Length: 157
Image 1 (tube, rainbow, N blue to C red):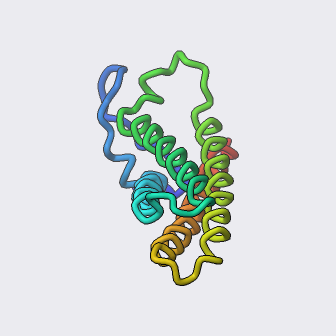
Image 2 (tube, helix red, strand yellow):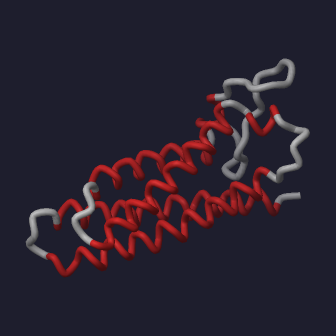
């Protein structure tokens, strides 16, 4: 198993091009991406529909982070980084910036969710919306862990 900070596993041997690479999801960063998507899906299920004002922004934050993580999952699953060496993109830096932004957006969305739902104690949708906010906290922490691992990898020579 690769080191904790290593985000990529060598794709199958052979020519260049897109290759199916499920081995990435046996690494710590790959597992983190799967956990991000699963918790994000749970947040979407719990917070929908948006009965409270802050829930709209929370759902926006979860959907944006969910979609960006799905894109990165496909980048690694199909070995797109390795298939496009001629494109001058710093993949790790790009993913790091994306993950940091998604961490911040999720943190703000989670605060918004919890602060607008808290005064409605006793309403019929109170419990599931608080649960969505709590899972939003967990998802924010998972994104922060992913950002930390990407930062460590980016700083390596």
